[in-house]
Length: 226
Image (cartoon, rainbow, N blue to C red):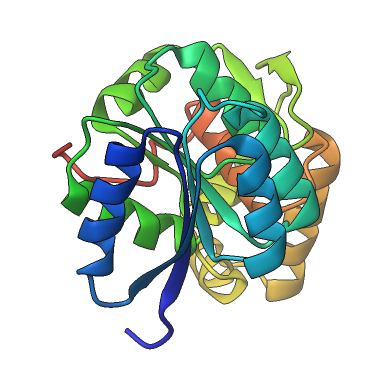
């Protein structure tokens, strides 16, 4: 698959961390480069190693997963953050996604599911455990912008803007979107820029999160096992 995806594990439960490290180390294309036992160490190791993906617990000492996510996203914005937590509260999910996380898995997820999630997150997709994905689709009255602000779903998009947003959130390239909508690439770029300005969102990942929470698309993961 080409480049090896580097992963930082952050979990204060030694047995959990060692177990997932052993399982991931056995996977081709994934390399666990470090493990952190608290949130502050996670931030320091992320800054030092600049991993492709951080697998982050929420309930950690010294610095919880929320604040660690915020600090890592600010210091190493290219690093993808995947939450792996025992907490299934949707408020937790919405909060970390607003802070910049790219996915949220429950700890009972299988090792195979975690591996798939790491690959999906690395490729720029948003991933949830199936149970969380279903709950989020039901509770989509609130949406998130890239600055982490909850706001009511009261922004009106034109039919063409909604079409463009869905295709962007599905990971289509500008050329593909242009072909699908029968417009020029330059017009696609204008739609993308207008959407970011209108929604106060500044990157494609933010547009994808918005589309999921607004119910425009389902979670980017289509896994059914966990």
